Image (tube, rainbow, N blue to C red; front, side):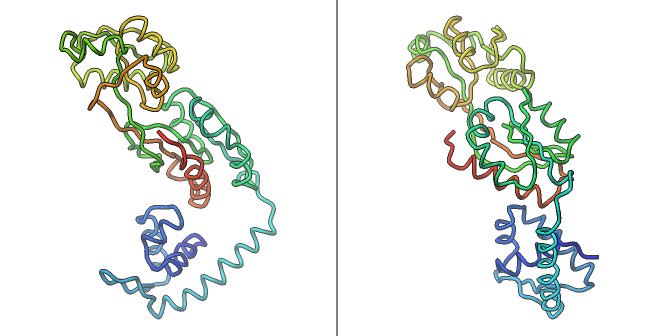
Length: 295
């Protein structure tokens, strides 16, 4: 039996004139669109589109008949949704972030998020580490998160890239002339890494080791201001996201070492078995609140 979701995707392809444009309109992948159409074609027992390279897909005779049925079915479903009271399951969503993202993106937009996701009730959860967030997403298919990812691959979690962010090695401004003159090698400057967040510490250590730096480490609290202060006090280098370091650079406290940046992604994440409809709604909100933020 065909599902409403398959019919909605089918109608989007017809309306938008192509699989890629339908994927953009629905804010899902082109592969997901193709999967839904193939499933609907299996139910119908015939191809619904004529496909030709460089041309928009055209409806077959079976596709024309399916179009009328799909329009009627989707319209009826929407009427039923507008009349029905939402179930408790449909009304409960969890939006997860780490402290920085909550303060920067979520808190200023809480009213907008709640309004956009009605009739669902949204619970906001702040977790310290990426591993905690990923575990929560796996255990609760109604959970969604904005996270910063170094790598994005997981058999049970789906990731959508929202915006690029970069991280670099920074040293105290007082050491920069010595570094530039060659009197002080980067490997001879001790390193500051976070003291209690395993995920961040692991990333910092990987970057330090990749650049053949020394292993003289200074542990500091994870907050950017404390890491920078420790670096200044101890004459140490540190690995920071560029937008976290912006203020300290502007005030002349630290200097970025050129050509030593690493790319991260601000990412939307959810369980792969989460509802396509809910995934699309929450992802759309996440894109809007991230869109105008500069990293």
